[in-house]
Image 1 (cartoon, rainbow, N blue to C red):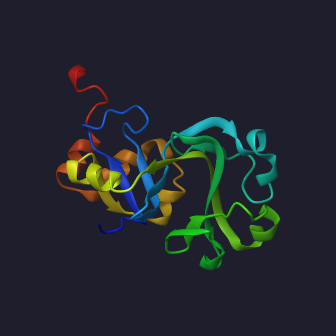
Image 2 (cartoon, rainbow, N blue to C red):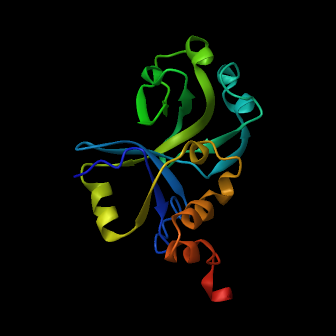
Length: 181
């Protein structure tokens, strides 16, 4: 098994599970015990200030809270770009990782360049993600900073596929329901 930590999982067109249809998932951790990721392109209608006022010192209070995945949907995970990568509890790539649960926003706010809060996460048991990758459910693409904190999260799926190029760029332009084409 080769770890795909720091990669984006882009939902393939045949992946119809409503939790992951047309999603882009950043893999934060992937090892023999399983994998943990955050769905980057599902903003909610709720602001950080409304849902988690404790994070207002760390994040823009008007920023939307994101739906990170179906696992532990009431748990909040903060994805951040850190001044010092060693401040991350889990490092996904470069200086982007997640804030530890024991850290208060006041302890790290000076060390965070940008951040985003997620409710829940995506999770896979041992070997599960590897099987889905072998099956072709997901398209892999290296993550970039602008993906993690996209100004247009709803357009991220098409953007990443277009960037990948070739036949993936064609998939990016597929209508949501090909039968109406």
